[in-house]
Length: 403
Image (spheres, rainbow, N blue to C red):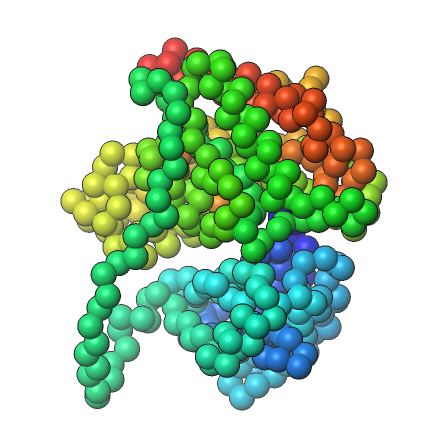
């Protein structure tokens, strides 16, 4: 997965109190549009010939902004260009696609200040099928249950979908559980080396298996893989599996990729503090306090208490994640080629479990010939696995000492 393909800051000259968006962020499988006011609704439409995703956003003062130019995005990922247009009462953002991709999930946050769309690469036939189904509509969470209509529609509600089957857990039941997530898989190949055509989904699975075997040989922890075959999992399913297993640590394995082959080195990402507050609000609203966070049933607490408990739990989780990231940087220093600034922070969906320390380990650049050779070698996988085992053993030794 390429973490960030473009981060575009767009400012508009607006009258006082008018609505405007402030930035558009495009990642390999995600589009986020941030606003400085409240959007009342959004609609995403897939269009053929040429393939593109049109996102119409409406709200108070929309359409007053003077058109700001949108630079082209880098030359990888499904989105190849972004255009901005005025529409009656709003703005349209057109995302031109270089490869077929559909909107798999998305929504406006509770305040209508951020629209996030999850993209899923698909075949051309699937793109045509989804585009023919019509647009997807989004309302802010705060408005979804307050709108009134003179009509009532009653339809049978199907039983809730079951999550994916839980993977096998290996190791001594008395030990802490580490869940290793091999990034991408199935229809999502991830980044691809332009010369050797080495695919990220294959590399991450081999590395995840090597880490599992190394941890099991150490005997200090139990281990499970979110996937042990070439299958596709959405981002929420990945950390959702770990939460259902009540994992003590979640490690998502990926490979970096950029257009310049000179970029090299491993890095580790943890969730940024900015995303914490937004995610805490989303959790409290979306899950309606029906979840259990760190052993506390939020259904038994009031709204204010629930928000505080979620926020405190997330902050502790983020601190534990950052501690493990620094440990991994220390243990990998002599084993794995690393970036000078090894530990980084970002608002990544796969890291948003509220009560489980989580990291995303970018093991190197698949676009770099030397890094790719290291990542696809048994020696390279052994070194990565050894660095993870060392960090994991120190991490849990410290936790048991603190208890």
